[in-house]
Image 1 (tube, rainbow, N blue to C red):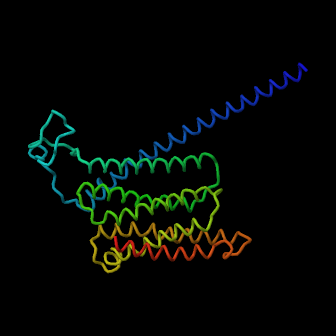
Image 2: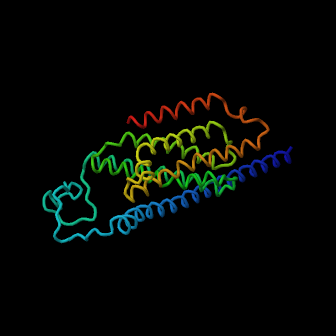
Image 3: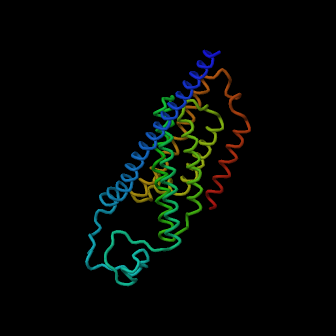
Length: 293
């Protein structure tokens, strides 16, 4: 009896020790995932605005803008609230950054925080997949990377809408942004090769991006790029936004075709006719809605 009790206690100690070790390993891995994701997020968030404004704007788009006189300039539009008692509205000295204490400034901050957190969480998820050793779909990782520009462009657009109080395309762009985020969520899910390549996921991504292609083409792409009516910076922007949409449709369709080839069932058994009908219906409705708003 005494040997049985000792054996039982030894087994309990062993199980507790293994669970403790597992806890510490998981905690350590989780910390490493967060740390690596933080570093990558910080580097990319530092580089993107620099490349955007410091390189593309200053060196390519508007290299002829003259330098300002830091000692003779004034800003009468600055409410000086964030300066407290140090300055008052009127003639104020040069600042590298001015911002007024308004509701729009707060909205710009909200959008910025949301986009940064979403970016960080998506990278943390990917780092976790890399470090866990699960098989990855490189094609989906590629789609995630090329969609960074449309997401960055969306943040910058909303920042500009609120900053300049010009809301002509706000709702229109908001629809694009929400659907882009939905697309990225599905793509992130499919980066993990253990997640099934289901037909509804493909249908969702293809539907959204075909709608983007049609609406964007009718909005500006055809006039600016195809007919040559746009300026060079408009053409670069339109092409940069169109390419990710095209690649999402092509890559997702190709990957689904390869997935179907490996299945014992036929395509008609993997895709419900209701999904195809809904695809055409949502593409039509999305196109109409995109043209109206």
